[in-house]
Length: 189
Image 1: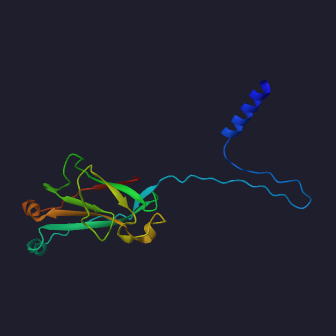
Image 2 (image 1 turned 180 degrees about the vertical axis):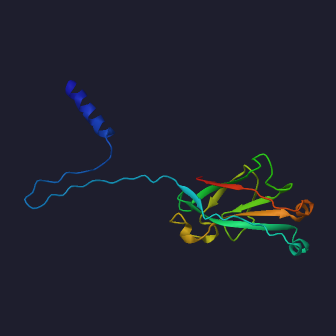
């Protein structure tokens, strides 16, 4: 009975052992060869880079253009993601007014603005967003691009943030300089 018990313990120990298959070489007069398995785990990673500051140049001519009721600016940037073959990620944009407030510039008074985000630089108005909103389902391959294989998109851009200030709000604002900060967060899905 004890031999059977020892045999069962030995078999269960072998079954619980890692599946590595390293082998030793044989003693030989000319050469000996062994093998080792090699394993690594690459974690999900995401990075935003290449952001540029935006300046909204407001001119009387632009404000009088009857075809536009808003003044716009955008910043294109790189998102690297290794989540799946399509480089999946989420994006969230917050302003310095806080997540429960609209996007707002401060200056002589306040000036509200709208924000759109996109994972395709050819589509500036893909998703309207608001503070605290997480836009899901983004891919670094949107618009037919290849997934970036370096942290700087090989010098290219694959995402954007677009801002717009309504003309009516510009007309109501006091003259002066208005400033604000957008915090753009990308995260793995």
